Image 1 (cartoon, rainbow, N blue to C red):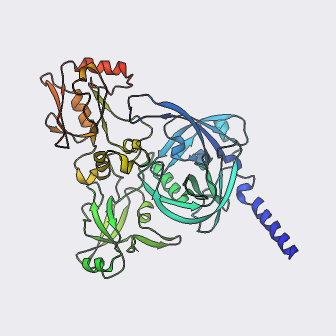
Image 2 (image 1 turned 120 degrees about the vertical axis):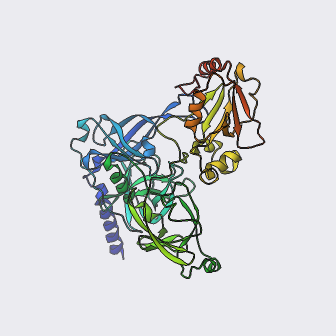
Length: 488
């Protein structure tokens, strides 16, 4: 018995130290990334922001590209790379970034950085219950660290960085801590994913981006642009109730009910509410909205996400008890209101006599805190989530966010804010660009800017044009407004 236990221990130790991730090959291709980033404020969009420092992990692949997370490189002003086998740091720049799938490709313009690098090789999708190794530079030290764990499941979930887009993620019990972000997840010595997020309230639970998402992102950038992942832009619900299926004439246990179709949907002329989506590319969709795969039952959106934008798919539907098939060309993601967090650019705003108008975005409603879905202003929250259906003609929701006190606006400085703009001088406001342009192109004959709001109980805001130029100049000086986003 003692010999058996000793032999088992030896085998475990041999397996641990002979793991491909711990071999010399490829270690110097896992690099530490130092960044300086600009932290902006959506509540005070005219401020220049503050500079923060952070670090993450990346790895070098064929072609000299450095893979990391988008949240490592987002809003960066400076990027520096540090190899595990060198004392020197090297500058780098972002080549492509996709906030939707939280991935970025960097490159250094210093040829010395690439000398004697043993590049990591991109592998294939692992199976559930297999062991993976996470390599990176977690907080608390400078050395390259490794953690191992088991893949427990493949999920379709919202990515924390973007706050809106959903995609696939592997769950593992390997430790993924701050600083690990962007590091390679290795299986059999090859890359099977990219470490990117965890859940603070859960123990031994981390997530990594599957290699299939990484490959899609890299293929997407082959043409020099990053278009993102396709989306049908339809709302569906499960058909678990036998009575509901019987009522709809669905005799088989398959399909999901189409509830709403966005006006931006690439299939808006093919699919309509009340249809039952039964299959994509011949793969049957269950009444739970999932299909069978080698990783268990997973969300049917995987059948879309594996395609590139502009590719065609085959949709099978049941409409009024008739089976139909369509070929549909996948379009770009939602082109209307900014539904995800804003990175790599300033928040838009226009100041008119101290009145700040902004386009509604996720960053703003999230300024109420983690519980914003309950605490945020009701109208802003509602129109952020439902705009494409309640106001389908709009490309943006423009709202009065605050009024900065000036001598010019003392008569209306105490007005309530968070009011959504309906019209400007009797013309509908359908986008922020339109609102901004029309404010700047005021004719000399217009004595007032008359701004009405969606809520009919809110009195129109009347801003006199006399003295407006001086008031705007005063606002720029007093509140140190950057850029040109003050009405001229």
